[in-house]
Length: 377
Image (tube, rainbow, N blue to C red):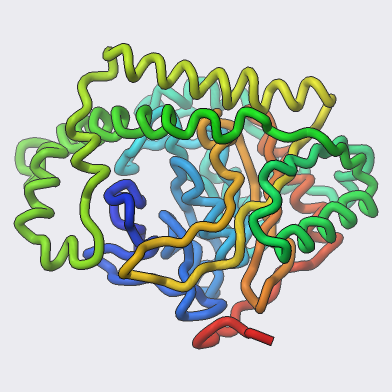
């Protein structure tokens, strides 16, 4: 089935509300109906959490699989860019976009990932995918953490003391499962390329969306980003009752991908996220994976002011194009919080093994109860 996406995958406005679209209205969080499901794969997160289906496919540019998984008490895996074909997906960025599985258990996510992966001539990024395939389900092992060197990226801690307390419990569970937990393994370059990431995404969005529109043929009612912006303006009462389209307008103002500003920003992102970021930390400390809080508990949906993000660790893996998986780690006032495992490219099987071992050791997920508001007791 189809689910409700944050409009244009949250790449429309600087004040957008996750889970809202002109087509589907506002998606609610099954744990507390006045809370936000995050996004942009909001409907997938809410639907799988609410048992409307066993598994779902989300898409992520930066956070759009792991954030709704975190907020809706799910396991969500963002694969290496190029493991799963993007053919047919309305794009934001060919450098960061990927589809990935979301489910209530690691085993479900592993099964769906196996069905999604593989090389596809329609997506040149997947040329190497067939050489990296694995039996993700067969590899799951409750003892997988024994001897694994897991680094702690504490620069993603500190935004909420309650989240920090849950993370300390999670680190204790990792140690008890046999992992070697290594401190002082911060991703020190994080936050130093945020402006460059947005520059890349704005350029990519215009280029990739215009290419997508062109692929639809002459009968398509909208043929360019410029026409999309004009459509929204003509239909502002339906399309922009709560927030505008500032990011669309900024993307439309960008030039071609050959411009020096784009090439410089892309090179900076890859250097700081990959070479001097995840790669450097994994190598320097001989790590198998890095862990961090995925985010905070779901915020109240606010159509007036937009989203209220607290913390997030999605950006390094998203910008690098590397895999990350979030798994439920506990609840705060009945609202889920997840732990993310991050590693180098094509390490999905390993990350799923670690996530499975953590899941089996903690059994932290709690079913949603569709409360009107959070359980403040």
